[in-house]
Image (cartoon, rainbow, N blue to C red; front, side, top):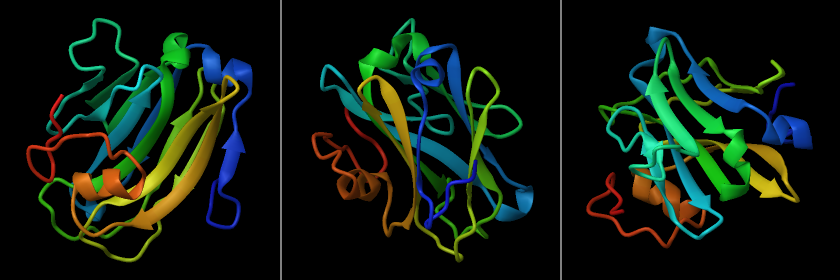
Length: 180
């Protein structure tokens, strides 16, 4: 399944939303630039922050021995959701950005893979842009994950992404660093 601006949403069934892991990867060539992934999240208990492999924190909630969300870098930037803890997650927004804050030659795809191997893709085909790109939102509705392709270019940094999508309970040390 490919999510596009014309067909932006998909609801994962209860099995896909609750068994194993859900993996989100930015599958891009080096020609794109220094593309990194981050995820803003809100847990059911109201806690919210962000995770990112490049500059941390890399787990949600921070310091957890069993994180709900983990960020890592293997071949590609990657976010992993532990679906055994799916009830702890209320919503999440995946965004892509340049670690150097430079302009990216956007391309490739955001690939979402369920535990059973089903794949959902969001093409990263947007015009050149130096700021972050809100790529995918995830909401938990009646125990099922609703995925939505956003593909919104945002001027600024992580703080502006958070404000644009209603993560306004975060306190920020600077434009990139939320306080926990």
